Length: 128
Image (tube, rainbow, N blue to C red; front, side, top):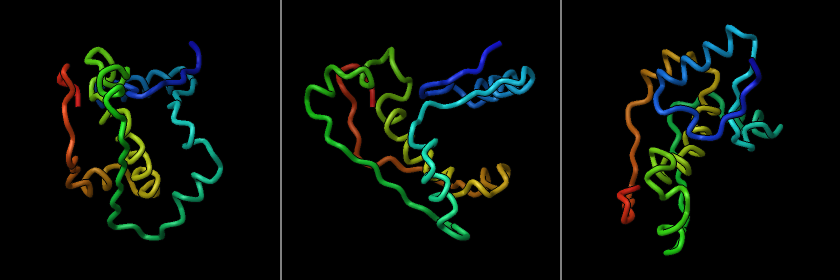
């Protein structure tokens, strides 16, 4: 077995991802995500710079333009199963995980009460 570097989405379900993590652990291998900013030294500082967080709001916006919505791989239905929302929205999710990284995973699951996607559109293939 080898170490594995994954691009997002790392799996199509949390169950599948947990199975991958378990297999890596059993074999003494690393399972790493390819989100580059996560591995930058200042990212660790960011995760500890907000003492006692209880609520965090993240926003991510960009204007891909007409060509993006017609031709970009993130907008193809055989690409990321969550479309560009899964690809680009991951950055907000990852930062939230960093802010709450000191919390127990079970407790954190109980704290997440809502996720809201505001204003999105589907392309001709039905991809968000």
